Image 1: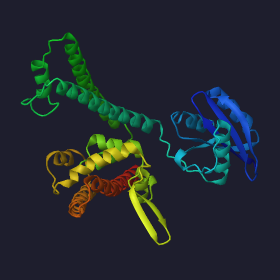
Image 2: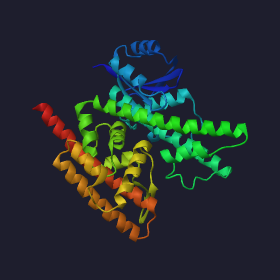
Image 3: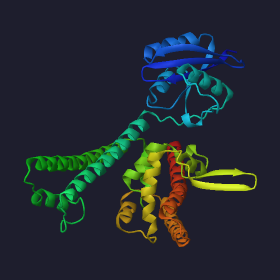
Length: 378
């Protein structure tokens, strides 16, 4: 039976530090540093894997999953590790690439590391596109703040220009806001250009998201459509959930999904003392953001009207998805009113509702994925 070798890789943009731990042994050997290039990685695998079975791991980071995909194509088992869950010694004050690689190999051999979910190429592409749209929304907010504060500093207040940042509002700025100094006119023109450019960018990215979803796998499309039965979950939010989480059936129960998202309360309990605090925020921040935005819709009384009614009529939703969505409205509205009556802060209430909304999202997604598998088998 071939020996199993556990390989720890400390990956950087230009270099990879390598350490190897033999199964059943105590010694962890450093194999030095190699360039982060495909050919160098292939040579390393041929050298280390001679007469043994390799299990590689490296920390999730800015280098993404390129190394994971390369090792997988070479037939090497590889896992990407959650950096925040790697055991560390409290008194260890020395950090080098060699020591990091050795620690990865040692902990990997001991089974003390927690891998993260690695998306396939299609999921990764959709996730990058969804995050590009999120970045565009953040840029739009920044540009709007810059223009608004610029107008305020110079006493230009649009009193009868309609809702902020509407077409009427922007037209009022173009027609009525004038300055004597050419420098201020140039500043206004630049701020307006950036605001309009950000809006065009968001529209373009949303169209690209719709095209990407339409070309996605049938199961992905079905889950995105089914999630839109929920109040506050339109196309972009549903696409973000699926892009960030992937298949929700990989979670055995909704509590695991809640922990993954970081919306469970932190706890410090010992003996008879039990103390809970704010949410952990250790999970996926992008997913947590869209959940919080969606939950605000549940402060209103349960109803199926407006955009929600249009979605439920236009999309091929199952009766089971609609029933779960209706139960979500009733449950979350009841929880919102009860928590607000107890004097809880709105942000705390929204965080609690976001955690419960994940349970309904999990139920709809799991049911939809099961239906897709049955249809494919038939």
